Image (tube, rainbow, N blue to C red):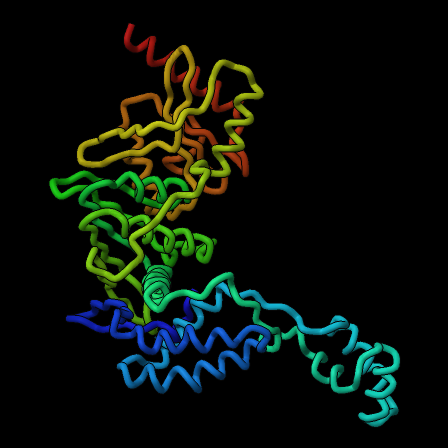
Length: 390
């Protein structure tokens, strides 16, 4: 995640802001950065950082880019690089030996004795003494360098995502092909509500700053929603974010220079679903989990169940509540009360209270949904539905 000091944005009317995007005009200095980086293999991280400031920043300034953009781009690119400790002997062992020998000896005497014990030249000992520090580790390049255009797109995405990770609430408008974005939101347990309107689908998501726990983990999940949104046509987004201690409104739309490729992971099942599918198969109860494109409409609201329990006796929708805020739970409970099809809600026991307290149709779980209890509740609900229709 880009740090606050690396966020570059423009202020619009009022408190509205947009990221300061990199475009084709920045490709000159981005090419300089890519060329300089080809010589970074084997250099320390600190030395590479210094070279970026020395060689790239002056050229970037000539093309209208500030230090934040340069350091932000290098931060994004450096994530692809690995680091290694360049020392034949673990630095911790070298420090123990040298510092232990320093008692009662001069520096040259301590280094000479350490050299004899460790089998290293005194100069190598000095170079390796702190070789495991983050800034002194040497860089290992990725398989291939990026093009300037690729680097610009990666930075633009990282910049927008970093701003979303400082959000209280995000409202996205999706004109068409909403399934991909909805699928991502459901897969990662984002606190999202969906509404249908003439222009398409409105998605309202709680931001990480609305939570009191797991904010970093949730923020990364929310940031991942942006690439899924960006591949849909004519999308737009407005987010309430915190920058410099003040609230601002971040505005983005389909004109933003963001990557236009995104794919869900090879497995589109959540960990909860994978474990539950195994547990249900072991029961041999005649029930199994099915992934469907089920959409339940309640007025203008759209409800996308996490998965469906299927047997010869019928189908029961299942919803798992993950991240939460009191407001989100209240809205979720209100929507669930209006659903008229068989539905079981699985709620983490940490917040299974109030409208989502355990009762018929609502199961509390701790870490893992109880497959037996879920199947029993599905059987009960189908039985009640049959009795009501008789």
